[in-house]
Length: 93
Image 1 (cartoon, rainbow, N blue to C red):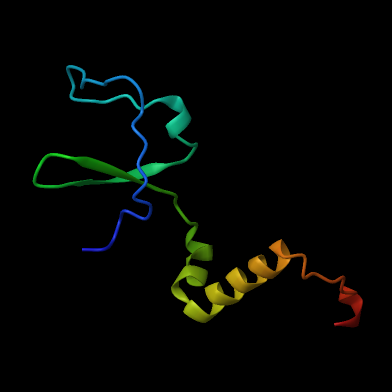
Image 2: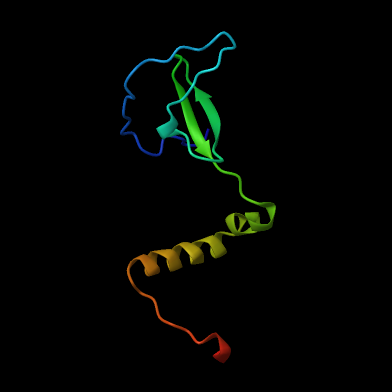
């Protein structure tokens, strides 16, 4: 199975929740982002992990399937975060 726990520093959310009559559990609003869905995992002792997911448009999925392209994007984002940017005159390209 894939590694789903990407940060083992878990924080207990205050309070308790109990499933309602339809077996639904309401999550605190600060934990739920807009357009988030969850993969649900459980283990043999009954612990449950919700792994938040977002949907990628099909027209953009190629990027995540192409290791070289996504690595290039990540390098560019890292360089931009470090201030390694320059202006380019697009008309000269």
